[in-house]
Length: 509
Ligand code: SF4
Image (tube, rainbow, N blue to C red; front, side):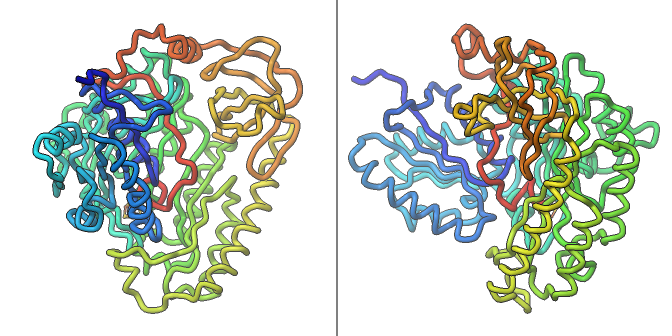
């Protein structure tokens, strides 16, 4: 009898939410005795899908089709499909790909090990989709991908109804996590070496609304908001009190709910980094109305002005959709106007495409592809120019960079290392004489600016070895004593970057 533990591989598509969910899926599987597959063919393949991208379903069925002969030649292999597309398509997946063993939704990722086991014992596909959250995902075991930075969920779901977005119907209404639990998770992460956390939610500024009336809110929320501050501003300030936590980021805020007290909390809390990702989506009020996004251009630019006044060094990034149904040339010019005014350091730009199940997919005025393409190219050209100009302003600045793993694809050839500046700009820097590890901090002077990164080729000004670097080294040497996961509390980690962020979930708020 083969007693070797079963191996698994997770293939993740889409946004940061999914990347973080995949950390939990890994944690769950490892807690159940599975081990991550190395180079060998895995016994279990899990697809964590995204429904946001165009043709996401064709891509999934294509991938499942490729796996079919592999499964036929690998007795006992199981295939599971979870995530937003599974929540949306449900039984259709096993109808179209009967060799799939398990389908699970966004609300019950904790069921995966049990469903795999049931499918194995009963030799029958298991489809289990819940309509609402069963367990707040952050209470599930997690296998963090990195020792120096981590995602921390503060809420799931969204109460907005943007007409291009499938998220509310797949992830449900907003549910907030208690601040005490969030802070306990952050403290545990810091205890394991983590220096940076990114607070994650579809609409972080609405944090607290999920508790309902204030009278019914947990005590710690009432305490945080006693001075009239919003719960999210209070949470940012509370992060400032976590000893050893050096960098706090968050994604994504919604302009409609962005209050001045959040800007004040950002400016006055030293470990909250000077960076802001605030989705614009469109500059025209008419298009924003059609998108059912309840702020207008003036409000958006007003927030930017206030952020720049309070945090002059802030790097502001955004998401923009080009070619929404009914967008006229004049509407598009309004988007270009906001881009010129806001001077984003970078932007994720997307061509609108119909997403089945969203109200916008059924709207009149869908634009021809050539029109959308031409506008998109103009937008990208303008943003590239601004990104480059803004990056050139960084020349000569001295920055402390958190050394990252896997952020510089050409590092070996260029003899550089890479990391993130406080404002989240990517910096490639000359290898210092002193040894440095991912998670350490290196102080460098910027010597060159490209549109999407900075270079620092002079010798490093300083190297600071950190607990995160120690944790990285211990993990690599296998001396960190990790048993794969910790139950209930997170293990060490870093938010893995999705290769290309999809215009969905946290990136479209
Ligand atoms: S785009 Fe963001 S704010 Fe709008 S419905 Fe989707 S998740 Fe919610």
